[in-house]
Image (cartoon, rainbow, N blue to C red; front, side, top):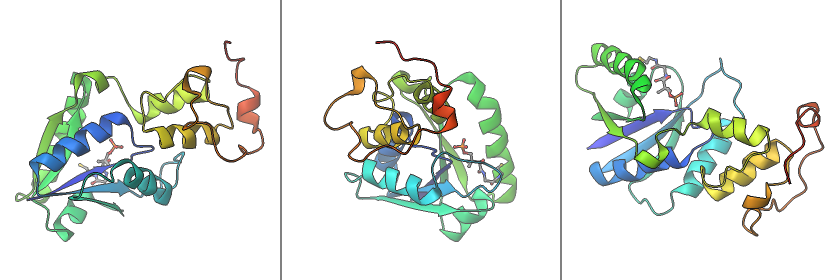
Length: 190
Ligand code: PNS
């Protein structure tokens, strides 16, 4: 059975990774499908997000990473998927996810939505939260794969906070020149 795990993944978090790894145990094949959404201004381009996901998942042999635009259900039909995979973190996710699942069911009765409860330790985690923490100088290396943390720090032209300063995490190239956003950031605590 083939499942599509659709989403924005801007960027992938350890919560997404948890769902991907568990989905790969449940299904014969999983495709992580990154939505190309012209209405959003993401932090990372779609090719960057695909690369981040691929670098996070070399251990998963039954995983493919792809992108799509338009309706998720059309992409799922095109790939002959049996299921859509989604993670549920907290009760507030449920309403929107249920609405999406019901809507998708009206568009294709054959494709089921399968929800996995996100593991407890990631139930608070979202890509937006990670970006906000990084923007204001907080450590994010416990929330996203290490190479993704480096990418995010580079985006915000910031040196990783002291807690994240391992050789793995220090960007290998000079961060881009300070942008106006970074100039307005508050001083980081020592
Ligand atoms: O990671 P996200 O942003 O929570 O993912 C939401 C996503 C991409 C799964 C959802 O917005 C989606 O399926 N968008 C594609 C357009 C679509 O199919 N809309 C109808 C869904 S009922």
